[in-house]
Length: 91
Image 1 (cartoon, rainbow, N blue to C red):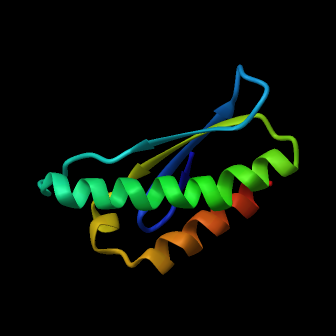
Image 2: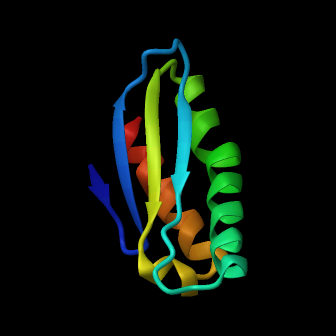
């Protein structure tokens, strides 16, 4: 388990032969529009930053990202920095 300011990341070995990503965005008393925005941002960062790095190194990991309440007000750049840091930690 890894924690950042806006995210909790849970990592485990994957039963599949490739890296996989899961995204969880709890309500935290926010509207569905806000939850969907955070979910789209995390999926995009996982698709463009996290998964390609894991696959390039041949790591078969399951990564689950859980948004913390602070993620709702975070700018995209802050989430991107945290995903990049998490990628370096895992690789």
